[in-house]
Every structure is written in C-alpha cells, then in structure tokens.
Length: 354
Image (cartoon, rainbow, N blue to C red; front, top):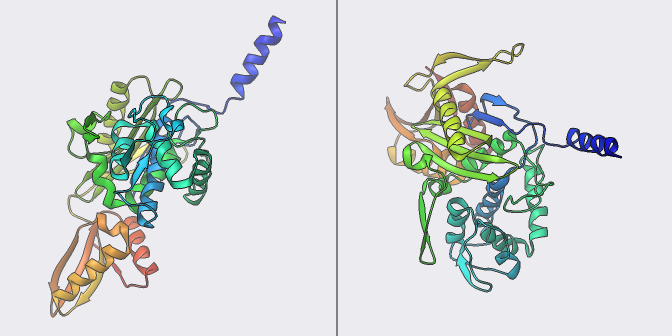
C-alpha cells in the first residue's frame, strides 16, 4: 500500500503542468524582438500578473466608452469575501473606475478585481470567459485564466512569453494609460496605498507594470523601462523573495538595455553584437507638406488614429520647399512595424536608413 502511494505521488508530480518555477523574457515590446529567455513557454501560475489582462479589458472598455473613469463600482458580498491583498471596501459601498485602476496596479486589490469583473460582465464567471477570449485574440497560446485577480487556482496558468506579449499590448494599445504604472502611491477613499514595486522608487526609467506573488508562483514582475525612444520589457517568474526578484530583473534589464543582441540557434546562447548608437539608424517619414501647419495637423491625425504612434517623438524639418514630419527609431523592424500600422490606415510613409 505504501509503495502504491509513493508511485501515485510520483505520477502526480511528473504530470504536473508546471515544469519550472524560474522563467524570464527580456525584449523590445514595440518590435517584439527577444534578447533573453529562459523557460519562456513553460506554464506557471501568473499570480497577480493576471491583473494585467483585467487592466487590458478595463482600458478597452474605456476606449469603447462602455464605462468611464467616473463610473461608480459597487462591491458585492462576493467581492468583499476575497482574500488579501484587498481594499476592504464594505458591501454596497463603491469606488470610481479611476480609483479602481490605481487599486489594481498599486495595491493589487483582489476585491477590486472582482468588483470590476461583475460591473463589466455581470459575474466573475462571465468575465473569465471574456478574459480567455481576449487571450485567444492576443495570441496568448499557453494561457488560461480562471479568475480576474490571480489568487491560487490550478487552472490559472500562463507563461513568461505570454505575459510579455500581453504586457506589450498594454504598452502599444493603450499608451495614454502608461503614466498610471509609474505611480508609487494612490489615495483611495481617504487612505493612501503605496506600491509593492520598490524599483519604481529607486530608478526613474522604470514604469510598473505589475508585481505578483503566491507561495507556489514565487515572486514575479512585469517591468517596463523607457529611455528616450528605447523601450525594454522584462518578465521574471519564480523569485524566492521580492529583493531577489528585483535584483535579478534589474540585472537583466541593465545587461540588455541599449544592446543589439542575437541568439546562436545551435548553442542557444545569446551574443551581444554591438552597442546601440545614441543616434537613430532609421527614419520613418510620415508626411511632406509645403506648410508647417499641415505637417502639425498630420502628426495630430496620426496620434489620434494610431495609438502606438503616441509613444514616439514626432519631429519636423524643412527640406527645400517642404516640411517633412518623421520619427526616428533604432532598428529596421520597428520602422517596418510602424510603417505597416500607418499603411493599414491608408496613409503613406517612407523608411530611410542612416
């Protein structure tokens, strides 16, 4: 009987979907170029990184004007029963959508995640269905959501690479909300909450996005760095402590910031090819007009129609009789991606190197 029990335990452990606790991806969220990865497709418990999807859906609902920032979000009995971390809002009391977004990012409030799920979809169960529809639409191939907050659930699974892709979509689809992930504290119903992400307080170039922890997942983070036009996104799963997680992600981000990195497909080792130049290598020309006022109007049009372009610096220079509007980027793939987005909106663009 004892031998049978031991065999059963071994079988359960071997068939467990989590193959490795440690996983990481470092790359460019705009071009989707990956500079470093370890166990990037291994399924793990995403803990509170789950809330990145909840936030993505909130931002999309705001874009579609199905909700607005001043809407009141009331807390049901089910919401108030959630385990910490939470705000502790009483049943039938409310906060605004604006406050709720901050509570998810800064406090990582599980009761708030349920409250907004019920507001958007009518129930937590229906919201989870929506989350998984979004996951499929965003090509998160190894992800399944089981709740909107990331509290322990064996069916709530994702990978470092899927969280990288999801975080990238937050960055490119909703740049107008990125400033929220930079906040280190927020006042909600008269109480001040401080961020769990201490890296934000130490380094100016970091922007959130989210931290997470459960006993089985370990300490996790999705972290964005912006320096000029350089975007770097890092995902780390499985830290033994918040300090260890922060040290490791900070080390990796520093290592691959301003680097041009390739991978040897035979050895699977990453090779630093060259330092990125301080000047941009590619120019995306977006317009050419005889009047500077028309160039400025065209830039405004681009920013209104194409969200990703709001994250870049648009410049104007005079070339002969014409005023040229343009964006400088560091690599051809980013230039190509931007130009494709512009052409999808039936507008012209031109890529120039050097």
